[in-house]
Length: 453
Ligand code: ARG
Picture (cartoon, rainbow, N blue to C red):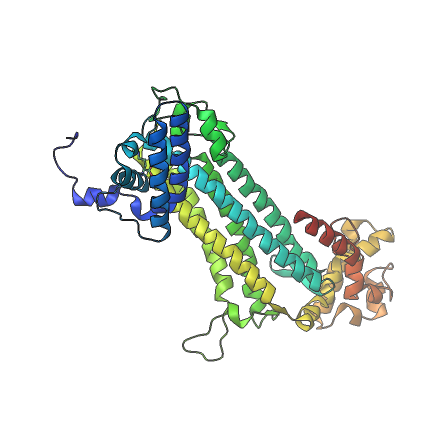
């Protein structure tokens, strides 16, 4: 007998069932259930013989799930019910005692938290692999000049290593965000909160928390079953990280174009065109660009799910999982792809050096040199702006302007500017902390490596 006289409508059943995606939680579910069973036995809520039967049952179920031989049934609504049903089928009454002093509400929150804890570890490892790849490529191109851009207009020359290391610092912040999400997930354990109010048994939640690696039992049973903030934290970390990778992807797309010509992608990370035989397309970099909004969408969707949701558990919360799982799969793949692609890229020193040799990139340095000769900066800016216009309009470079043209602009200008216009001298004068001069980049490489120590 049960509460229901009629079977579920097939459309509702299809909508309500989460087994299709939450079967990914089976390891966490079994882990949580083993800890729960041990605690129940330790408190005398179930017998030692019940515990032995339950653990024996889980041994077999684990093997079945591992081998893909678990006999799922059409009535299994979610992974939690499927595992419990199978356990009871295998070991009888002891299996039916497992759900004492527990609800699926605290159970699912616990399983998802454990899953997030593991996913953040995988993300941190993948981030560190990419950081390592970027550092190696930076090291190998320590003194390769290239232009850096603002507004995608050539601005000032930098070393390629300096540019690549910018991504390492972004990723270091991403790593901190993932670690934070992991800490939040494992800080307070929902298990033992019951449906929402606590349970009618003298449980030991400190024992289960210790076994499962949580900091402490959640002190409020209502918050425990309602909380999915750790999923928001994970998605938020993933969204920001993916957004960083989209910037890297976009730069690689640009650099791989013949217009820039700064790098050639390895064949293993490129695709051809079905029509144009000459094409080698940076599809991987383009996909890095496009994966970001997908993950941001998952974050936004879960904010929407939780928005204005009354306490405590509501079935809406079942909608956390597909967003979480897809975001995790996507960010792990994107991080691995970025590492593979950047490690295999061949940079083109000639093309980058030619672009960096553009003398207009020395305009700021020229203005600064006038400042050192006592001219107020705003006047220097105007003087050099005029010089640039004269050169551009007459189709010449700055060093091709005659001495007379120079002194006509300012008595402080003279032939000395031609030496200053050398790209390497521009680079090496950026000696300030965090600047692009080689000594500073070498220093930075050491700092970056230390992040991975
Ligand atoms: N499949 C559900 C979820 O993912 C499990 C919890 C169901 N609890 C309930 N009271 N219906 O959220």
